[in-house]
Image 1: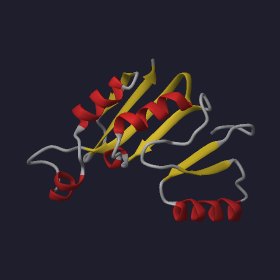
Image 2: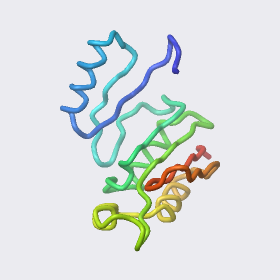
Image 3: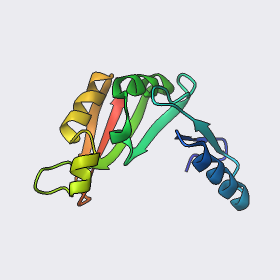
Length: 138
């Protein structure tokens, strides 16, 4: 999808997961995925280096969401987009695991991301237990 000249940065706090990804890519002849070990406050992506950031089922793990979102905002090029998929946190609907594990619901996540310089451009509700939000860098 990124084309012959494109790159995918795979960020994870777990270096072992990235080493496993690197091995799988090598085995499949994929050479345009670059693993970056990040920390709880920074993606460690270069400024204005990406067009799209995709976060799936991990936003709720952000210990410093505003600092992390600042790092994402800086890494995105002008007009870049952020897609977040995470678990619905709804009392009486969501599982006990979600209610005890996921720190913030969709409304709080949206507020945090908008406060970090993003505008919500799309919300989709096609998954039973997760929501889909697409933002654009302001």
